[in-house]
Length: 183
Image (tube, rainbow, N blue to C red; front, side):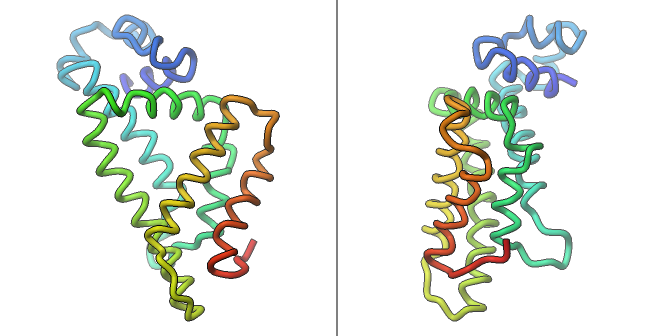
């Protein structure tokens, strides 16, 4: 309940709206619950960050027994349940806090590593299947940087590029290295 309230506050007003009073009002609880469950507002912010990453990881993780597919990952990150104004507002607020919040830094290192390994693994599978020598770890970093930048641009000025154009840019990056993907 507190995590959802924190997400709602970030979506509405960014990091300035992520106050204990706003979160408690949104959740309909007393201030002491934040300290009880998360030690501090920073701890709650780290839990909110983890929740956002878990939503993304869930969307791009293949079902049990299936291989990760770069095309499916690209489609997932630009799907409307992730690629929307509310999510982008939350991510923008969270990204801005990583440098200043030690709890958030720890979560970022862990979750970004998991995220990067999942994407690099999907890229490595395609490269191996096609006999292509590629630095898939570096390609994963480039891929993440591209769509993070496209998300940021969409948040700042939605008129610059449509979701379809952003998705196509990510396909081009990967296909320039690995060849055509199933779209």
